[in-house]
Length: 249
Image (cartoon, rainbow, N blue to C red; front, side):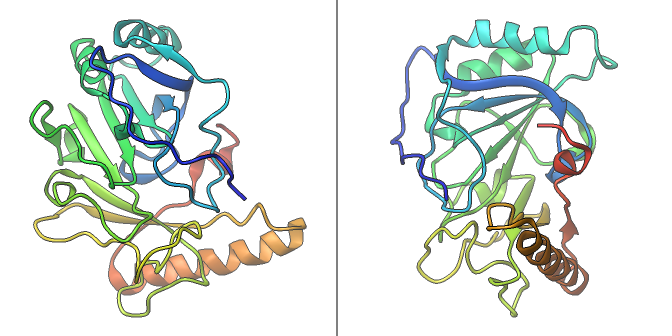
């Protein structure tokens, strides 16, 4: 059960960010699944989802945008072919002022994915967001809804919506979850709306927090089957949390 506290938006004009960790890994979910990247995990979230299994509060520290960019570059070292990919996640990244950091990363030639729950407005007047993932350039937004609404702008600037699906919470009408990670919503979790033209990704919920490995195994199989059926019937893209399968953070 996630008991990390809800935190309000904290916008610092100098762009200094409160982070939890920076590490080199492989992106395990969504449109860039399988790509080597550096994860920048920001501290704090404006939601508290009971089923969230991510640690985003401990070990937090403040880092200015330029120093944080240097930390990212150190993680890459001389790895890769020069197309450096950065994932900004949390917590909730748009709880903080990302623009200075994004400009530093882009100035260093990196392309970026931001993972957001979609409840807080993005800086649409300061950053151009890309929707064509085949280009591997610029800044991309992946919305992973947990609440009943997302900010209207995401329907036009997000490259993808990504859902965590439990077999116990499938809407038979569209195959998407009614609730996600046991977060309370009025009605059902937010859906993409026009003019959204990106992909919808479905990840089966990991029930690892259940008592006993056998119970979790059974629940995981049921949720995987539900996700598979949803994708087959509605044309969504199935995700399998690749990072957990191959054993990386």
